[in-house]
Image 1 (cartoon, rainbow, N blue to C red):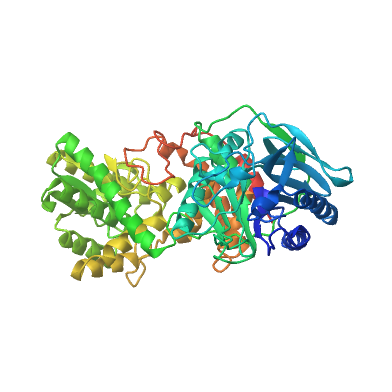
Image 2 (cartoon, rainbow, N blue to C red; image 1 turned 60 degrees about the horizontal axis):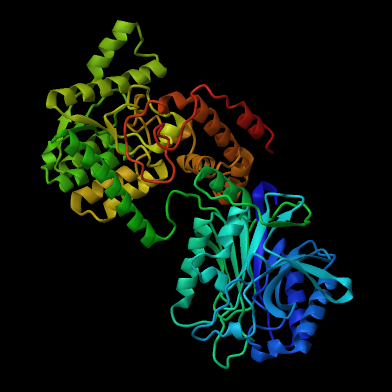
Length: 636
């Protein structure tokens, strides 16, 4: 439960219709199995004590009374287990029968909810037996052995961890236009459990999955759907036991069709609460009844995985589609700006590195959209002290392959003159040595743009902005920054996608650029002419920094939580010591470099994370990092 991770489960037990003792035994077995697996809350299907397909047997006192006796037996047998169980059964109240979900915990019956929407169409005839619950339903139901259950709309809250809250709806409640879960979520429920008996027909599984994902996304919640399966009567229907656990629009776990047992997932309560805080339009409503359960605070052993590249879709088909979409968004942003100012030429610095390559790709696509000759793209290569033959030749080849006009302006002499003017020794390879070159290149680009009545296209990416790995008023500045919300890990995939769909010399040069170490090339090359200044040797691996950035900015994770999941995700690549070192570097640089982000040029937002002060990130440049760095210092 540390860091907000909670293990929950949906259970589909073996079942015999109307055999409450048999069904209770199977429920007890799965509760024990769930407890052994570290599950804190387990949910069973609709009417799981009796079976859903009892028909007119629901009108028999024998069945109703036996269901209550078996519920009490389940409560007693599981009283020593540190788990919450949500169990379905019929309850008769004042001459009416309700389809209910009862919550039990440590030998106590915590409360119950009743189904509000009773279907009476197609294959469903529940109105024949059950009454729809409404907001006025608030009563205690007597059970055997002195037990009772309170029946009312309820949000269930963990005493030891108040952030852990859940609500209940039952099957058809999810399928209506205004599901009860909306009110429960607005009243604070972060998890919604649905006890269901959804029969299987062609195409229904995909629709069900889509609906659950949509509900979990629109309510910023975890949605756990427990479905009945084999054992229900097949007289007229077939049930598949299609259990699904989704979190904020994504499926975390899903059972195979026609299977039994537990479907388990680690949900992240803190992540969901952050999402709700971030969305100021998330509705709040007058609280419904509150009931409390108790769980020991333990550390959840995580089975959940975390992608090493959270900005990049894991599915190859989705990745290609996403790359095409992103390139289109970048190009439309630039196209709109060029059209607005009536500009037919664009200037960009082309280094032969990844970022300037992506900027050229985007500019070429924008020109195609506008129907302009790509010769209007002025690609300026500006060799200086650190330029290697490899990057220089790649820049030249790339400009030619895209039909851009290549302008070569060697800046060595102008930088040397600048060194003389300010009294800088050319043998002193300090920050002034490096930044003088970056600022001279920007001056050349800006002045060239003035000459041509053009604008300068920025090439810097989101990862560099997060780390401040840009020269202030150097490559930090442009007139439109097309890569400003593209992290370095995604830059590689976008260039790689362009390479895959290209032909001939363009394909060859793009793949060579992808294979070139990331470097600003501001220090002289090594003796063999290779790059001497490798960015990731200095500031750390970009894949780690992008991982840190994603979870810090998108979900507000603390350094300790980011460290925990990074150690899980990168266990095959980096030691815990290495991850901790670069995590500290990330936070130190992120806080100290905000002043560069406070005055960024315009650029399109294309993902959920961006650092534009006009869009998603507003932070004082003099904010202290001490709180975050102290937390890192305490990490093992």
